[in-house]
Length: 288
Length: 262
Image (cartoon, rainbow over all chains, first blue to last red; front, top):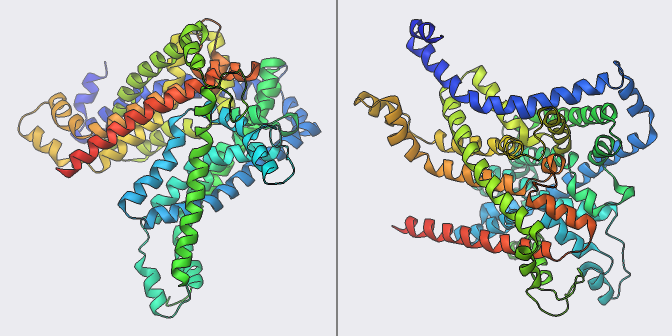
């Protein structure tokens, strides 16, 4: 039925229509299992049990919810910060290593991916439990036992290890493109190594830091399985609350409002971070 | 002098980070051979019984087979849809194309539970909970971004003039696609398919919501077992997947190394 119309179009326009049509099947899947679910979540948050913003009022008026929301942000922040600190030297080593060593380092980043996330969380349970490897080592070294499982610390340790590859890879891809001769040039002009790092290398690597940090932060905000299995009642995150509202309490209105809050945090984070990733950071000192 | 010191410090730090990345996962290997039903480390005794349990216990064997089957279907569906979309987007370099590309990537950043709750609501209406179609649709959504990224990365280094050349020699659009484009972007399609399979095989959050007693995927079964009791069968399954992926990736590496030497 649209055939005659297509024939009237210029070849260029026809090419565009054909190209668009190729994306339609994928978009149809998107509409059914992404768009429709989101619409339902948002709709229920403002219609159940009655139309209005009652569910949002409830969310922001209940202290427990605000505590959990703050905790979710706090955990995501610490996980991101730790990931940056740990990933930076590693990605740097990857970018300057020889071919074989680099392959080995990349392999170490990818190995965790060979086993599913649930199984990796299972491994952390083995390590973190009260009679686990970490506590046994601490005891053997003459230290006190520390409680790790069902605590915030335990959840953070597990999350950092699981999310680290998402920080290392973007950082590495940016660092690989940095011309190390710039550092040599700075050195030959009399800059001290520390100065040349902070004034030249760090600014050039910042887009990678922001790209990785954004992904890690967003994924950490929505983390579900690891906090559930490694954490306890005192380390509940927003995702768990949503699941409780919907599956245990069958309160779709409350669950929907919480979901919208989490979505807003996620996409707000993306909007703030997007320009930071694209910006070029000025290399300070020297000629302008 | 300070340079060598710096290098040694960097090497040491990297060694520790690499250890931290890899070692935690490896503790499942000794646990999988434990003789007792406990997760105490180091385990006592030696036995194969947790491996036998994967195949003897119907809950484990069925969920493993289900996950492999769903993973293969998702890999096929997501690869076809994702490759088509990537090909379309490559020719649609305008505002609309940019928007569509962004849309196709959103599943990656969606908070899992929000998506799961929404999909659960839709599936309750359409009676799709606990069905093959339900799993395949949801997993395909989550796998699509990886296929689009992998194929697009391959397309961006692909010389489009080859297609023009083939067309100018009289090849039809379908022939160009079949004999020129697809073979040249095959590595991207293949890695996309692999990512799609892994995404489906590992997916747990949405699956937990749409699962049923009759049709359960492996991650759901693992999760249920972890919340119920301590079962080293999880370690056995994990070790098994680790061995299979190591062999597959090792073979792939050897293959690409031997080809690279030519």
